[in-house]
Amino acid sequence: MSFEGKTAIVTGSSRGIGRAIAEELADGGAAVIVNYLENESRAREVVQGIKARGGKAIALQADVSKVIDIRRLFDQAEATFGKPDIVVANAAMAIIKPLVDATEEDYDRVFDTNTRGVFFILQEAARRLRDGGRIIVTSTGGTRMFFGQTSLYLGSKGAVEQFVRVLSRELGPRNITVNAISPGFTDTELLPDRDRAVAAGMSPFDRIGHPKEVAEVAAFLASDAAGLGHRPECRCRWRRLLTILSPTKDTEKRNDDERSDAPCALRCRGGRSRYGEQRRSDRTLERGTAKTCRRACTDPHCRPDRPRRRRAGLEAGTRLLRRACAGRFQLTQRPARNHRPGRRSDRRLGREPEGQQDQPASAHQP
Image 1: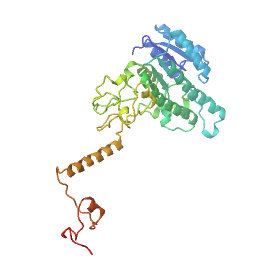
Image 2 (image 1 turned 180 degrees about the vertical axis):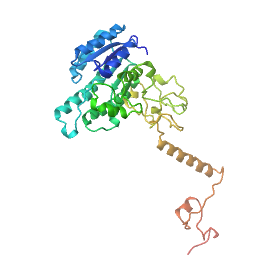
Image 3 (image 1 turned 135 degrees about the vertical axis):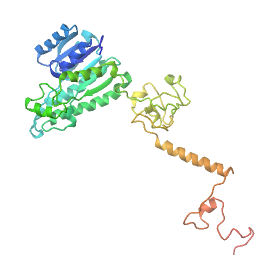
Image 4 (image 1 turned 60 degrees about the vertical axis):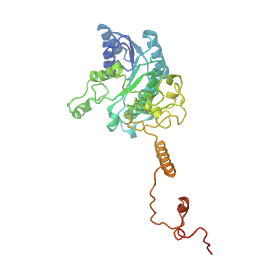
């Protein structure tokens, strides 16, 4: 995969999965910022290996648990290689112990790096990334496996996955994708030696993963081939279902009759966008200006406006009664089971109660 002319920041890339990702991106032509916390010699070793293969890289120290260091990292990276195109939030730490034994210091150490640090890395990436950029966060498959003594680590990673889901919606209009990769047991220093045999037995291949295998997945998500991974709106197959009554400048060129290409999110719920402010910046739609999806849409979030469908059914019934009253055809009236003569329904339909139909109009009732 080619990353020529692109800049990538990879946190925690002096070893393990982060190092493999940095090397994979650099081999594709990206200029890589190798971030480290304490081990400068390892980071320089990674940089030297990248340069030996003809790539571009620089090592920058930053503690991602501190916001000031995160901002300094982005400032130095931008001053060296320009605005970033790819940001990989990989730095993490783990403390393995039962929840009842965890201390406040343990909690702060894990969550400051794994959760707080990732949050502010995502924030800086959202502010500085070029349109069409890529953001990748390294999570873990353990968030779905519930191992004992991992409450701190898995809890911090579970929060990160929610950051990714929300940010993917917020950056969608800029064509920036946000993804999390959740590798299984991988051959890194975070995996204790005592657990490696058990971890290998849980795989159908009877082995643990290699960092390069995870790096190949990250490289795909950072490439142009993954551009359709997280679009915040769908383009429905059924395009004849939206009519905008008050089109703005960007919709005047469309055929507003019944063939708009507007996303399904704008068709549902009376024309209001599912994603709120995301669409208000470039479209102004009043409530109730959109017709209803009447056929199946491929977007799982696109739901027809049920009150509109009920209202349409009532209007059809009203038209049917009006045609009947105009004499176009005759409705057959079935008497109710508990029908009693002289009920209000008889008078509304113009029928006389039983016992009075054969009497002359001038008959006098005592």
